Image (tube, rainbow, N blue to C red; front, side, top):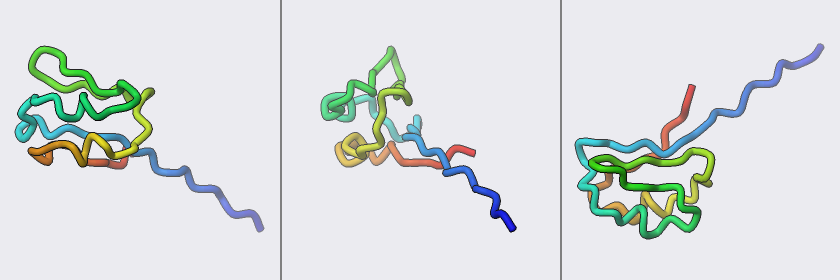
Length: 70
């Protein structure tokens, strides 16, 4: 009997655009340059993001959270 392997759930940082004040705190603390403010929104480069959570901890508006991707 073989057991099927389940895929490991993928995770990413998600931005709540209604809470984000675009203050740049998350950009300033990211050691991997994964966060960037572009005009009026925050862009997170999923290839560069290591899910270290420093941006989540730095956000004064609690606009960032880790979410599982289906």
